[in-house]
Image (cartoon, rainbow, N blue to C red; front, side, top):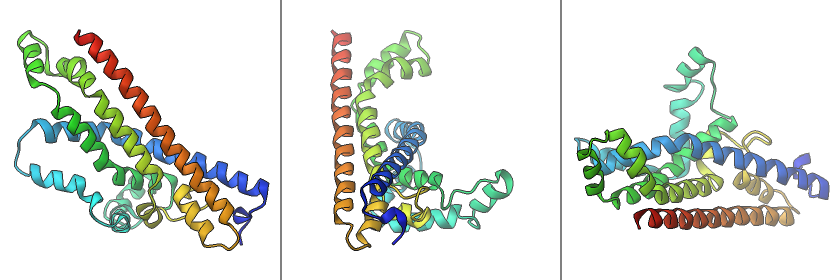
Length: 241
């Protein structure tokens, strides 16, 4: 048994802190980097009609219906050290994603991306386009209409998508372990730590603590989302009045 799997009080506490901080970093970067692309993709699918739109929509939602391990393997083929794009990234920029926490964040972002896009798109579909059209007739540029009207009105959807993506990233397992592996201190997030603990005898208490930490994080994220959504709704209602 490795030292980090020791169930002694101090060792397991250090493990929990390490895994918690790493999970928050991976999930945070996954959401931060994918949010602009998620908003852009939702806008494209909601407001534009073009050849291949259905195909793009299907590709975006593909991670929801195929095994996460398959997603991880695809990332490995594309972005591995000798992958289609991974070799180019390494030769040109010296960048390696596989078996790193950045790779874990990428895997989490890919798996959470459909949930983010769906939430933002539903919110965008609910925005009355007549308001946007009226602003444009008054001389506002498309960018100003988006920033001052559309974006504030779709804020609840952005918040919901962000929280959903964050929670999904915290719970990502299959794609992460396939693409980034299960390396202590580097890619071992909460689900991977739980998996590792369950493979060792006498670690049931430690595994239960990891489960509790995961549940608390998810509840806090949902609570924060609800509070922010209510605050935004009150502000928008006040502005409309």
